[in-house]
Length: 483
Image 1 (cartoon, helix red, strand yellow):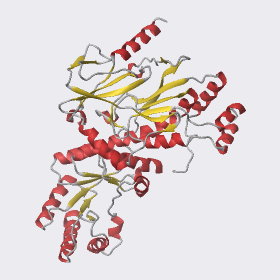
Image 2 (cartoon, rainbow, N blue to C red):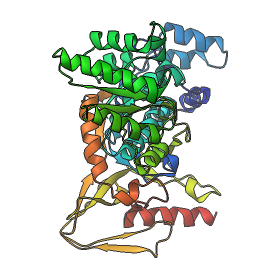
Image 3 (spheres, rainbow, N blue to C red):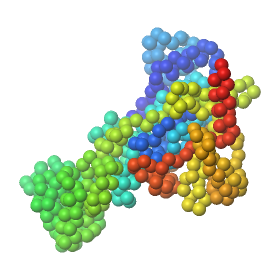
Image 4 (tube, helix red, strand yellow):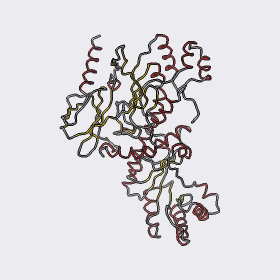
């Protein structure tokens, strides 16, 4: 994965359009916005992830000899265009919202400002990377919220849709809040914690359950989580685990991290029984870990039922985001630069209101309530607009503009979200380590109201338009409606 040239990771029409631009001398500098329209899982927010891989893709963007030979074999590209591609490299600017940031629909997550052929080529790969990792990071954030501070381990590699999805999905899951992953390659590539216990096959390979537990405890005394449901959880598994724990204690072996894991049955009932058995045996700090097709809804339900589980292993439903398998990000032309260096706004119309784009060269500000530092709204505006938090700020819903909110001077703060990542083709941004992104993401999630984080009918965070951008959009729509 790390050595593969991804330049041809694109849709064919990106290349045919590039040749069209090349032939017509249409090489203006343009603005493209990557954004999404709806939160995954009908939630109230999403988590941005994948920027490090976007950067890596852009930095290594080139057509090698094999690429050119393959494109020539398609017999749809002329030699002068193929010659241009053989010397291709990205020369534009890219702005992005940093990984781990809480995000909302319709605001630019990545903005590409580049000659149109370059900006067109990178569309597919940017969306492929951003859509997947943002989806899994968002799902992980939801699962971790349901766990209410308990550790959540990602271990869905064997159910992921291929090695890339399993590895980069695990990276995104850690950004979203997981305490570790079972994926060793992910651990190596991104320096994240790798965790795991053992399978039922370990138990079954020994003459009896006790012997299997005893051998495992001898090998891994400081990470001794025993799988207790191979034969009978309450009658066999837990009593044998307790026996091993007692022997470890008698031998003077410190019980630093130990406990049981259950992978089947009524997890609420079994965990409560297990907790009593462990407590009565003198092991009140023993971990009770659970797996078995968990997701945020089941974890929330188990919590509400009084389950005593303290650690969760989440696989298939997390790494595939099973109930919402696509993020839905799109990439749309927003402006074209004229000969005077001015950006002329462009808009896409549609019979579906949600598909009408926001025109112009834009940026995004996050508005916080000063007292709580919770998110009040996001504001999309044109580049160059300024705001003074010492003055009142009027916000309105761009779809229902009669709905207005007045923020009093001094009652709010603002932060620009987009940062410059590439300057004239050179990366000027340093991607943090994944565990540092996770810490940042944890702080980001704290800026959300609990009403926004709930799973059913979450409170909507408004993404508003500045007065100037709204008037520009309205004027363009009016003019187009008169044609």
